[in-house]
Image 1 (cartoon, helix red, strand yellow):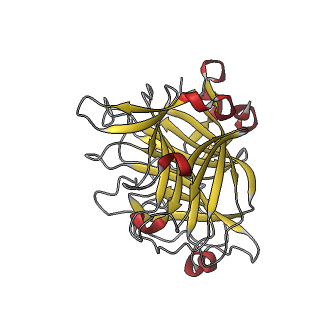
Image 2 (spheres, rainbow, N blue to C red):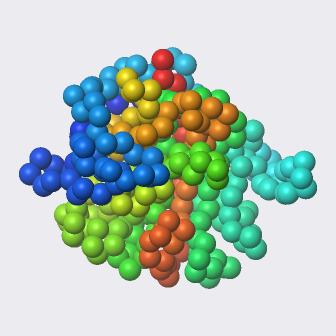
Length: 298
């Protein structure tokens, strides 16, 4: 089980990439006392000596969704009460894609999981290139969310990403993301991503300045976002790749603010235009989603 490799204790001040390079004082980064901005949902580093014990999650109460277990008949059209028609995958996921796109051609039930493709030659626009599987009826907000994915090699000139996201509602607009991408030239230089490596980008899409990047490779990965409730009642978010936590963020909201509008887990692929980034993709890319796991906080 993926959760078994993520037992450790991490400091909430571990969001910086390394000890020798100071964390940029941007809203959303984990620079204690360095955030005076409003409305970005990220904290000012209160409780920097607090430790997060990931053994506080409940592996025995976890839920695992094996994407390889889905068959073609599990992929069907569903009509909401307001008449809006969507595609669903089993009872767990709703498929999202730009209007006018043949969803079943780009979100495919495959033998080893669910494959999500971005093909710029089949109707995608320059303003909204994205496919996603949105988790239905996520009952708990806090906990550990783990996506097992197989990501492709990405060309330097293509701004493709894939991974996991937690998203609240249009009214609240809270979002946390953990994606594998190539990264812009400026990002790669700032975070010292070596040539030949991809980047693991974590942070909040609500505040692109919060993003941190870490080197990684194409292939199979376990991507995790954890939400634990801090002593002040607000969330601490943690981001992990293959069992290693790379960073944490103090958030300015907690379970009370999300009551009734729990974070929705999203399997997302696309380009960064919808979060204020560049938008260029000339090749066809696909990411295979193999497994999703959720482990609630005690």
